[in-house]
Length: 161
Image 1 (cartoon, rainbow, N blue to C red):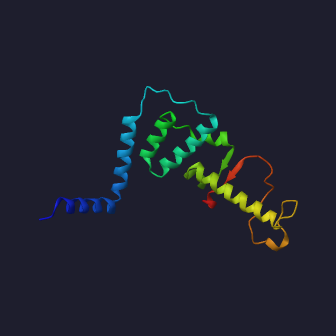
Image 2 (cartoon, rainbow, N blue to C red; image 1 turned 90 degrees about the vertical axis):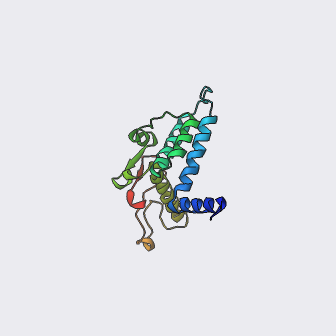
Image 3 (cartoon, rainbow, N blue to C red; image 1 turned 90 degrees about the horizontal axis):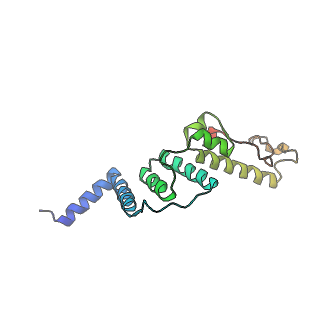
């Protein structure tokens, strides 16, 4: 007959193999946090920039099915239960998307655009672009770019994701 310790190990292994153990642990953490969270305590005022950042994080977490993390984030930060509209976020962040990038969180698009911008700036610094922002003749196989000193809209393309 199996000992209770053996049964615990088999149960733990089974839950890990199914991927349920992590979800159960996250749910327990969220419930403990919710029980300890004093709802009568006023949440500190958060700046508009922090609201935008928290909303980007919330969208990212929801997309990645981290619902318990979202509930803790909302509870800790005092965000409203209903997320801000994505179009509002896009407008506030001055982001223009293409069709493929609309299917993923804005945070993915922003990070992708940031990485591409930095890569292009590094190429410029190494002399791969001339002063007009066009490619030097030896870099014809690289992607086209424009001058990035302009704070105009961030244009993100799904093909980079």
